[in-house]
Length: 332
Ligand code: NAD
Ligand code: DAU
Image (cartoon, rainbow, N blue to C red; front, side, top):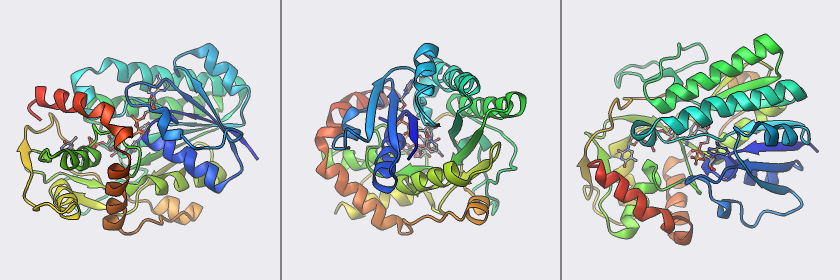
């Protein structure tokens, strides 16, 4: 049994990871989360108290981080400002959390010689053309587009520097777009599902041709556990499940699965600097560490996610009106 510290464990992917760890290992988890607008303690409801401890706090608080690092064996770092649209509106919190927060954790990892796994995104590689057969690999040059992705790229480079300069025992993973339960309603798939539940037409940015490479959050969690167990220190692993789809097809599938006409959506103002296409080649993770995804059927995973939002309106309803007011102010 190991003691894990999970930063951002009350957010979307972090909370899915905590559920996965409790279900599949005997590790104890301490969650460190500032409970920003994106964090929700209800995402951890029902987990056994002897397996999960929650600490409310900020990853830029060096004293708190130092004391928590001294009590655990390893750290998985999910905490971040994560939404591109917010980063276009107000970049500052992205610099504070994604850059200074990651720096604060790296310094603690160095002081306490703790194993650290840094969670990152495929967006650090920029975007691909729609008709390009290429996919991102671990050797694709960094070329981030948005304030969000540039701060994630910066955090990755800090991790690499701390490994090389100070011998910090860290690994990095860059994953594609996640879907599943507990995702904030500001994000594409939950926004459209909850719009339909509320009788609002889904909103597609621009023509809807942009492609994202979808993976179920539970597959992301199993990949992270695999890297934590068997990953080589200093290495980067790309995580993806061959799930490329354009946004228009996803909206139409959501409408179809929810019993609405497939064309009952609106085109709205496009995102500034909108990345065209992401696509992950996860050969390294599959061949070197033996990982494979288990949620092969996107339609089935999406149907289960729709059912989760139907069953858990009390989880998302408090955020919905504020999110829609924000988007309306941007013509989105
Ligand atoms: P999220 O916004 O749902 O959750 C972020 C969590 O971090 C929240 O619980 C929030 O309260 C917490 N947090 C924010 N600032 C903090 C701070 N200063 N101190 C402590 N806690 C803080 O994000 P998510 O979608 O779950 O993403 C988690 C991680 O995974 C991020 O690092 C993101 O870059 C990465 N990622 C996300 C995706 C995706 O599709 N969502 C894909 C690849 C990588
Ligand atoms: O690729 C990994 C990244 O995926 C993560 O690093 C980010 O944290 C995560 O938010 C996600 O970023 P995206 O910008 O791809 O996700 P988002 O859900 O915001 O949008 C997905 C696509 O849908 C994108 O092309 C924009 C479009 N979109 C989004 C919203 C909210 C719409 O067409 N309509 C919408 O209402």
